[in-house]
Image (cartoon, rainbow, N blue to C red):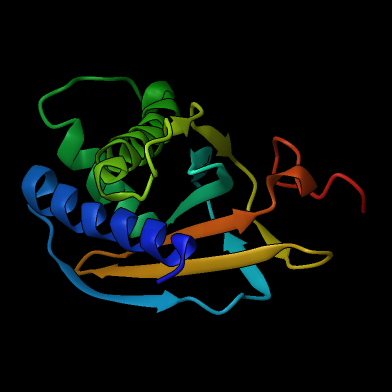
Length: 171
């Protein structure tokens, strides 16, 4: 199994563990797309970070179905009072926290060959858009299916092709 597949498998394993143990949400099925995809659909909210494992840098992107992010939001803010004006910020924070928690735990199962694993802080993509594969870009993904919605976990490389909004640097 190549390093990309190992990383994606570790991440999806921890999605299932965190969802089950912290959210009481079962993963029903996972579909892996280990062949490079042509398009990634970014929904709101989408969050990403840059992961460096064994000298390989990848953009790891989480894209949430609206129904799933709402379920996560309600589960993680139960008993907390907040205003309607805070709703969007809290939903975005939930998405970023889920990415951080899952990737942080998944690093235990990633092949690091004795090297330090580095993780950047999550960045939010607010706009819905399609990311089309071009140049030397490679897109890999896993679709995690739960009873309340889907999470798409994507791996994008090389990172040098993209800016902080996941737009190509040289169009």
